[in-house]
Amino acid sequence: MGFRNITLEDKSWLERLRDPEAYPLTAYAFPSLFMWRQTFGLTIAGDEHVAIVHSRQMDGYFFPCGEEAACKTVLEELLKQHKSFCIKYLTEQQAKWLQKWDGFQVQHEPDDSEYLYDCGIFAHPTKTTCRAIHRKRNAFAKSDPYTIREVTPNDQGTLLNIVEEWAQQKGDEADTVAAREGIRHMEALGMNGILMETAAGNAFSLGYENSEDVYTIALCKFASGVSPDAIAVCYHEHAKRLESRYSTIDLEEDMGDTGMREMKNRLHPSGFLNAYSAVFTME
Image (cartoon, rainbow, N blue to C red; front, top):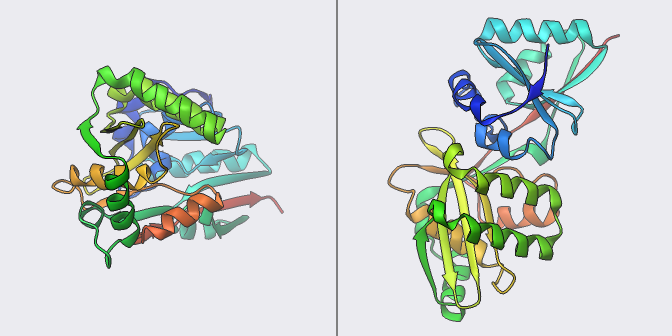
């Protein structure tokens, strides 16, 4: 298989091959693949029937995406080429299917599993339904009165400046690279979002449609003078603009980050998209 770099021209091809019901994890959504391609060394191979992603950083493959027979053929090719390899971002159904193949060992991956939330609750939080957002929104509005508007292409420079200030605080270069890519190409990627403006500074959230019912918020950043509670407020304000169209918000995985895991659990997820991995070893 001839792997090559992922480009914007691959968007229509990959979106045609991906059935969100069969591949619900955001790892397979084109905006995610494109934004994280540099950080995780993502390359792609395939044809009109199937696509498969390889990650240099993870030293493994994503489950092939496309027609079932073509996916089976790709997996059989991998078995011929490697004595050992890993497949990431499997759904439970895909994991069970691979368990039937000789040589595959499957395990649950909590760090890669995604957090799902009721969009209506985020949009209308109360002390009982989502206390964290309810409390943070009210406190933030009192200390830092804000205005909200939809992001436009003219806001690209503003968003990039927020990311640079955020990067100086957090020092997470991998996430910063992905954020820059998402912002620079947000129109081509089909991303949209909201911009929060306060006297202390600005914050924003950006996302995209993952399926007809699920919207993924992929980026949420705040400038150096803004309280971290801005994240919860952005989720709330973004959800208010989404609730008429989507039932669920996906905040992606926590990547094993303890702070991120605690924050996402405090927002009371309504469910999870469980992710699995499979390792093949020739006996």
